[in-house]
Length: 405
Image (cartoon, rainbow, N blue to C red; front, side):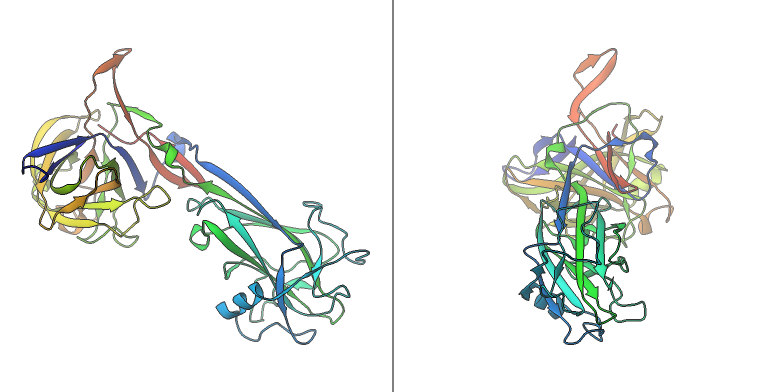
């Protein structure tokens, strides 16, 4: 529970919101985590109809004597349709054991010997959660994928113009590799796969491939899915300096709560609960930031709608399940205030400012939750609020109940 004081009707009007916490932690123990029920996807792209290309003007030569540019990839997208080969393709392998639907493609039916950059569009249902996307690539090729190691374009496979560590291979057997794909390379919707077949021997040229991209889509349906109870510890939340949270401005973690605004108007005061390493930390500044929700169901990292650094008023209000004193904080925000719109989803981030804390480089503040728990089950308080903490461990999306008071 967070409490916002607002200026909609008068300066003392109070709005209470039950919120879900999502923490992006720098380091986690995976032992207590359980699989997150996000939306997995698997998309297969294979050689055949719908592939376009550009080719070298002579055999045995690289397509370019310099690294591929965006103009080269655009040219491949708008190039001539690749020819799907029919009939006997000896001495090449007849098909891929991993995907018999894939078909050999080349410049023409005579398999003209050229170095060729193929382009193929494919669609993804989302930009996957970072750390969850992999590409499994099966192929056969005459002569190889990518230039030899001393060439200008040693990679044989690209997604959206970015090279992946896939190269080599031959035409008498299937070659397979699985590589990680950064989610930042991918788009929700249209994407392009590029395959570079390098001619070395002035004989014939062609490629046969099957590419399967797998990952996890963020799912907003995870909202209100996992219950938490009262006896959970607090969670670190810190930035180094009084600036938006970015990969270069954090210490341990940043914790955020999501909420749906119940009115349109200004927010001028924020109240929250947490634990401190020492009572004197309560006199040090904290950062308060409000974020919108992005298409991946998260706050857009480093791009707050409002951010301010304030010194709150604080008083002790209880003890948590780890025996730590819990402080209630209240801070007046500076004008111009954050202006929320009724019905919109927002995220609230509250962080210790490490450079101004009593022990720089160490955790001096941890963020707790506060909720009204009105019913009991087996002698335990049940808070009927929903919470998750999300991260990725070894490429797998994971979740567990948020660390709440």
